[in-house]
Length: 99
Image (cartoon, rainbow, N blue to C red; front, side, top):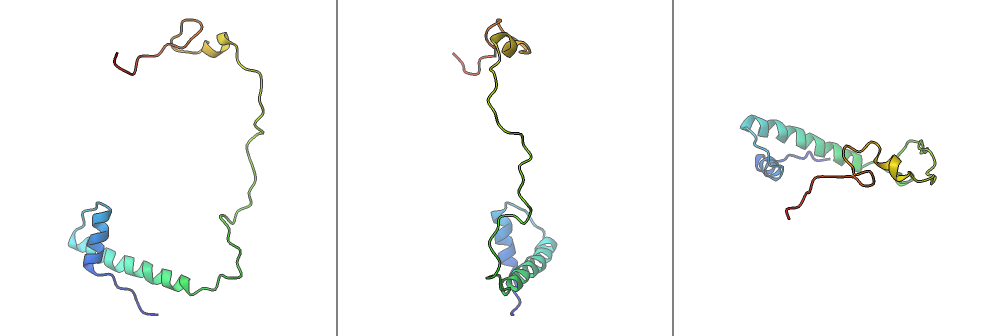
């Protein structure tokens, strides 16, 4: 398996896309690190996964939420009881659009 070596210009182009400013020391460090990461992905590509079913998670799926059941609606008085400002029947809020 040939080793992947990103050029310094490749790293600068990636940094530019990510809107990052890198020093020359950063470019050299990320050049090595990103090349190592790409090499590892090449190793993973060699694995035979044809016998493994595709899954989105390896954890068992269980619903921890309660059932969603309709209940009685609040009365108007209950709905506006804790409102910071109301006229007794409706919520009052500041205008968000200029008139």
